[in-house]
Image 1 (cartoon, helix red, strand yellow):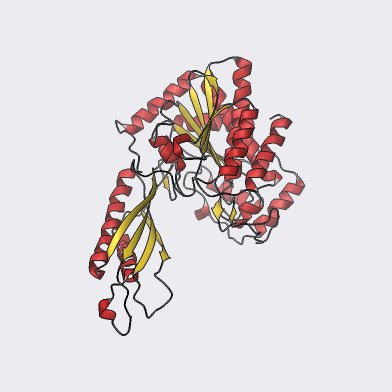
Image 2 (tube, rainbow, N blue to C red):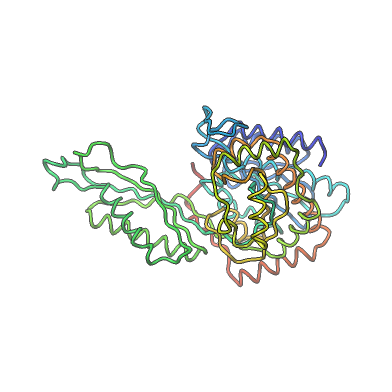
Length: 464
């Protein structure tokens, strides 16, 4: 990659790191990226799918159209000083604990390399860099998929900062996010308890019912909740208002919707038992990920050609400090199900402060616990993802350690590698249209006549 590009990308990534913003409010982050893309000759459409901060930057003409899926939102509660290998919060309420400042910028880097390739070769094809907001909470790509933003795309490629260099394998869970708001009647809890109707009781009964439901869910299902309004701080007042937020997950959209309906019925039952009323507020939803083995092979071949970064002694010492900040015993059960040689990765985790080799994964239908709105794109167009090591071994995503390492040279090296691998994969797809057709054929076979049905109802708009 050109030194000019590396310097520019580092400046963009660090600027986004320094302005962490929540989903659908990434105004500064979006502006920084959009201005950079325009400066480098991309045509940019903003406010994609009425997301305010979402954008689409395009270069080239004709088919195939290849999409790069970028993100830039941050997480609450993760303000942290940079490069400090101990928990040291700064005065910011948010932080890039999932590396999305790198993610969006790395896609821009791939876009620059692909633009240069298209200009140099004169080959027909279009590259699009999508700025996708609110992955952490809001599911920006779902609204974009619902509004047909990806309908004319042939291939979608993505990456995510992580702990290892690999092509991601397997699937992820479908997820529904909702809030139950219970309304009761206040009363003196000692003097006239019979006049009260406790909204907090309804919340607690909902949670109890959900916990009893666990015995009758599939082992891969997940239901978790947080009481966001307990109704007040006075025990001698029957709580008239209370609410609880739920995430419901399963391995496919139909299974998740069925489990969602069961949880909703539990809340309705709790309202009936307590003679309260309940409002079911739909927040967001996203789909499970559909793998594409053809694209995984293209990405693996590209990754092996590009190679993994080399690290200096100073970088290894830096990574070791962060690895030491997180006490853990490395065991085989920590290794992902899809890894081909688990013992090799385990040994690397024990002996090296950072992943320094390409970790091969088997093709797999295995569903990992967790969700991403990349899943919705994969229901519309053949999609695949890589990971690069941007952080030391030890703490995983959504940690202060990831925030602290986010501006480091090892983070940047991981980001540059992702840009180069994605660009190399795009080159192969442009030069070999039969690969695009093979990926589409696999997609059609997996869909088997199914059509994408957005899990977010049409009346729900992007919201914070």
